[in-house]
Length: 293
Image (cartoon, rainbow, N blue to C red; front, side, top):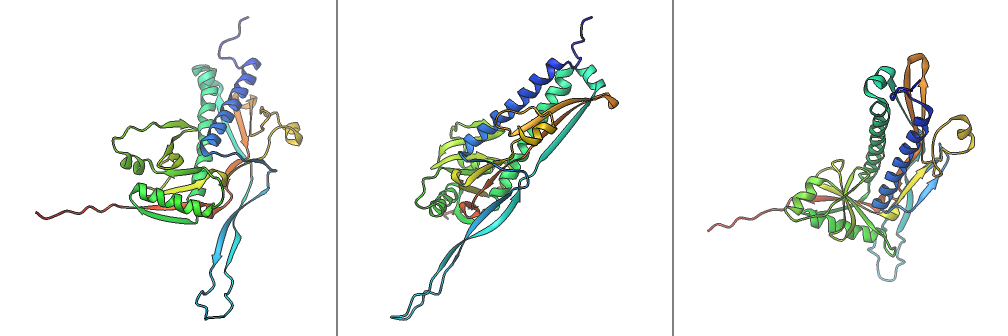
């Protein structure tokens, strides 16, 4: 007897899971390439991720002739602590949805939509960290604000070879560009421009507050993760993953509910190492002067 095309058979499950994992890892690799991240650190869930800032205390420089000059201090202080945790997602489709729509639209296509949402969360969390930068700059107009931010970035990473990354609001960017032809690229749902206005990569996102822009060095960013492959976790759960272990997915039927579920788990985050290595620059409005004739 022929099997109905919408029947969820074993041969559909493994390739479907592998495709999900490969798609996610491909997109994460693209994100790391865009941001220029080269450091990927495997940790255990529950590990503490420490984010630092530099604090400078200047002593009074008004010293009388012949007196000892007091010491100023530059200290590296703990600014924030993050805990690496599991992110868990579950989606269920009913037998009715599978029968009416087919396996591909009901399960695989909705898995893809869930993947997009997971990626969006990673981006949202990263952009929120950029906004916490303690380095400050300002400039009249977009280009000036960006240039001054790059100047502050050079000071923050003096004597280091760095690649610059800027997050900007698309309205601010295109208002500056006007009608000039610009070649943009997309990856991980991000629109970006490379080697523009002295910045290695400019990423546009509405998550960036209009009127501000954030600049940091790629070397200031780290990808932290807990591997989901092997060990006790691999013995306890039948997640499909790959050699990186960045994310795992499991598909199974819920017989008592006549439904089918997708469970996705990751423990992944991108954080800066130094908040003072992120420059938040304010774009001041350009003033126009009118002459009386």
